[in-house]
Length: 306
Image 1 (tube, rainbow, N blue to C red):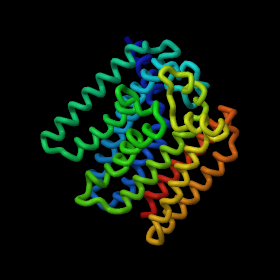
Image 2 (cartoon, helix red, strand yellow; image 1 turned 180 degrees about the horizontal axis):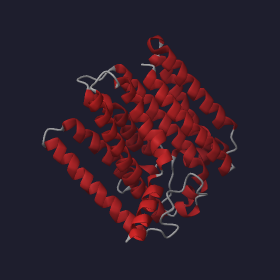
Image 3 (tube, rainbow, N blue to C red; image 1 turned 45 degrees about the vertical axis):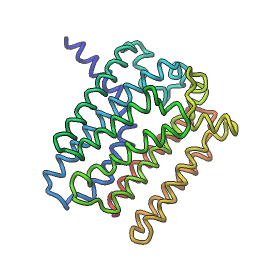
Image 4 (cartoon, helix red, strand yellow; image 1 turned 90 degrees about the horizontal axis):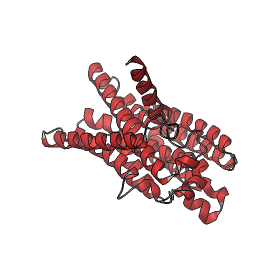
């Protein structure tokens, strides 16, 4: 019994891929919760922060990864992935958990959370219901048919990933305040774009595996590589970091430190991406780690300078 519990716990930790969750979902939450510290009751702030953290790990760490692992196993892309930072949790490939169990758990969790979202909406907890519904939508639409947006260029970023990260960034202020301040929209937008940008780098080592998948997993990175050559697999990431840097103009003089920090972070990321060897999965993964760190630092920086 103890051994089974230990194995389940170990598999759960592997599934979470906590580094990805922290550098995207947790970063987005922190960036808009920091400005609220001191402005709302301390107990309310702590409870809200913990609620959002739990939700992020449940929906991103568990639900999204369950569904993504299952779908990418069926298409075969994870089988051929270099599997340094990419390639899923590898729970299926190593035989730790059967594919059917992963798929069944993901679909059951999605159904349960969808029912909870509906219940929240019906009982008057509209904001909580909307936020939960967006999270479930993102996870399901990203990996499951009929949409399976992760298998199409641009669709995965804008139909699934962006709404979930943007709303997660808005969640704290939206639940705590009567009206949303401009800084909440700004921080949520910048962090969502940064997340999409480093995800594009995350896909680079998997270009060949994604192209061999059935059905073909034609991410924006695969599209760029096939259209312009493999050296241009970095193009989608550069484009999204350029968009991130452009947000500095919106932050403007009123939030000058935040604007300068955003511009510097985007410039540093672009420098790293342009100078990395896309043919070397290990080097790409090293660059990705720096980008994850930059994402966290930028999120905190934006949360401090509002």
